[in-house]
Every structure is written in structure tokens, then in C-alpha cells.
Length: 595
Image 1 (cartoon, rainbow, N blue to C red):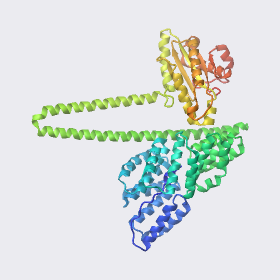
Image 2 (cartoon, rainbow, N blue to C red):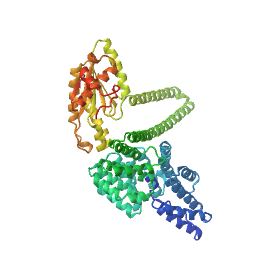
Image 3 (cartoon, rainbow, N blue to C red):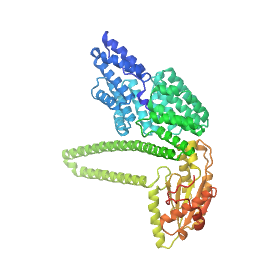
Image 4 (tube, rainbow, N blue to C red):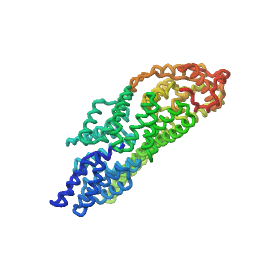
């Protein structure tokens, strides 16, 4: 969504003499009033203003250009909007209007998914905010900043900017208040925080009273989600279904797509396949040109599950392919947003470091000048200079080493669970096996898979699923010795390498892991559900020192654990597990056993 285009706060127009210029001023004020709530009326007013440009002052012409850029952005014509706004930043006469134009540029970059450019522009925007005299322009700049932070997943920074905006002493009008509160609730919801439904309803009422149907319906969708997440799915469906005409009337593609895909998902969970199919197809049709939206991924998944349940193998395969493509595009987009934030943050750090370095170099020059002026102090000043330079070099060497270690950790550790990622676990396991094979030692392998994890994700959402993975990794890591290796192989599957242990000892460790997982209190996640895991165990006395075979045998034992009812530990038994081996087999470490 693009609330950054909607925050009101017209910059004051320069004083004009009576007559035609005053009439232009009236049109500008009306255009500011309706620009986010009535696109058709805004277009008509801009047509009138374009016809009256000959009678407008320089400030009024700039204001017309700003409104035209705003309309282009609202309509999805980002290139033209960016050109208009950039011209205002470079040549505009009114400082407040230039600040609003820069805020609009930040918003346009967010809408067009150019997050790196948007975050770079945000640095310039933040530099201008403290010196701005127009409080409305400051509000719009803070709102644009919060919107972009929300889009790149930095919800805490978005809430920080919105709280700063709400804390300002100058009161906001009803329209500004409605938009700020809606974005704040969206950021809270995206970060997994709960909020009172009464607060959302108050925002909806405020937006309706202010004549902002787009923002009101964004808030309604947030309220419906809160209903669904609290178990009132039927109420959420009824609530949104009764308001779909209002959602469609906004003509805002992303809101319409999200509303239809959300309804489709809920209807599927209630068993209404016809309704789910209708809303999923509507979401896909509305998302034309967009490939990385989460609602698009949801819509394709709904159609895939409907086709699969109907026994339509060809249709299910086609929809699954589309779902996989959409999901990949969405995940790539999420990664791109995070990468853009990290790039710009590091660029800013480097710029600050360069400034510090220039300051230090200036200090060196001052010292050198003093040395030349005070020959008697040459020896002491030269020593001080050398110490300073050595300290600077030592500092940067320490800093580079620390950064190198940080990047190495990022390459070796799974960012969600803080255990080894698949690649690093495999490398460490290979090295351990080679060493203990030479020493005639024993190594055991435990494969652990969470039971019914897909159901947890589908029922409570991926935020809860991620929370579960973190808790499971923490519980298992606490049982490992310093020589043991634990890694996340993918999804909900973990592996533990136990040097010096045989299968019996490994089975005891696996049993303790299983007990700890079953004892995890899920209440802090905001949900209550059972949590269990199945484990497969083998050791090198049965499987040898080849990692792929060790993983394969542990995986076959894990499959037996799943087959025996889950929440159990099974040690590899060649004949038994061969009989139970799944059709076609699976590669070690990547098997897809029953969830």
C-alpha cells in the first residue's frame, strides 16, 4: 500500500494579489483538500489550474507542479511523477514545497520498489527536516520516512517516526490523524505486535469522518485480520465481504488485490471453495503487472489447494507452478528490501567514517602547521603525530577485523535460529568425519523434524512459525556439547552431529531434545498449540564415515519415527527402514517427510 502519498498538510502558498491569481489560490486549496480522497476531482481541478497557469505566481506554478506529480504517483505513473518532483527539489522557490517534493520522491521510490534509491533520498530528507519551518511539511516528511521504513521491513523505525510525528505539539487535523494511526497499526501488525480492536475502529471512524475511504478500508482490512487471528474467521469474512464494494470503489490496485486474496484464504479455511476461487481469481486479475506481492502468492496457493482437493492434477500442477513463481518473487523482493536497507546503512556509515577521517586529516594538518611554527616543539609534536597515526591505523585494523568476523558469521549461521546453516554444517560435518575416521572414533547423527509444522504456519502465520523455530533451536542447542554441531538443513528440519557418541547415546540426546520441545510454552507467541518433534538416529558403526550415507540413514530412521506415530525417536535399522523407505527415495538432508 502507499499511505505515503496520502498525508495531508498543504504548504502555505505565497501571498498573491486579488484577481485571477487569488482564484488560482482557491483552486489550489480545493485540490489539496481532495487530493487523497477524490482522484477524479483532483484531475478536474488540475485541468482548470493548467488552464490558469498564465495568471499564477511562481509559487503557485510550483504548487501546481507538485499536485501534478502527486496525481501521477497516485495513478502509478512513477517516471513522470519523479521527474516533476525532482524539478521542484532542484528549482523550487518555496523551501516547504521543496521538502514536500523530496518526501514525495521518497514515497515514489517506495511505490516503484526502488528501495535503495528511496533510502538514499531519505538521508537527504532527514537532513532537511530539522531546519524546516512549515510544520505541515515536516509532518509529511516524517510520514514519508515512516512509510518507506515500513515497506523495507524496518517496522520499529517506522513506529519511531510515527510516534515522533504524534508527539509534536501542533495538532493534526482529522485526516492526518487517521492516516498516521492507520500506518502505525499496520506497522505494529507487521511486527507481530497486538493492538486493541477498539483503537482500529476509532481510526476507521476518524477516516470516514475525514472523507478518506482508501485509508478507512486499509484499517478495516487490519481489523478483519485481527478478528481472524483471534479465531473469528467467519466474522472476519462477513465483515470484509460486506465492504468489498467500498474497497473496489477506491480503485487502488494493491488494496483491492490484498482484500480479495485475504478473503480467498479465509474462505478456503472455511471450506467455501467456490467463494475462495472467485476471490483468488479477482486478486490475480487485479494484480496485473505485479509479480512480487504477498497477496498474489496467497491467491495462487488458494487455487492450487482447491485444485488439489478436487483431484484436478493438471490444474493443481499449473497453479502450484504459479504459486511457486509468485512466492519466489515475493521472497526475492523481501530480500531485496532488506539488502537495500543494509546497503544504504553501510554507505551512510562509510560516509560518516570518511568525514571522521577527513576531520582527523585536518587535525593532522593543524598539527603539522604548529610544528612548522614552533620549531622548538618539533620532536614532541612528531611523536604525538606518529602515535595518533598508529592509533588510527590500529583502530581501523581492529574495525576491519571485526567487520570481517561479522560477515563470516553471517555466511555460517542461520539468521533465524542462530545455529549453523546447511552449508556450514555440511563442511564442519565432513571435516569431523575425516578426523574421527583417521582416529578410529565414532560419530552419531540425529535428524530432527517438527511434527505438523505446516499446520502451525497455515493456522497461526509465519511469524508464529519463525518463533517456534527459534525456540526449538534454543532448546536443542542447550543440550549440545562444545564439540557437537547443530544445523538447520531447511524448513523445520535440524541435524545434530555428535562426535564420540554411538547410536544409543545419540538416542538419549534426541529423546532429551524431544522432551524439551514438547515442554515449550507457546503462550508467548500469542497462540496455544502442542509442539512435538520426531527424531532419527544413526552412527558411523552402522552407516560409515560418508556424510551423505550418514544423513540418508538418519533420515530413513526419522521417516520410521513419522510412520510410527510421530513424537518418538527411532534408531536406524537397515532392514526395517528399507521396508519403510518412501517411494523413489529422497536425497539425504533434504528429505520431505510427513509434517
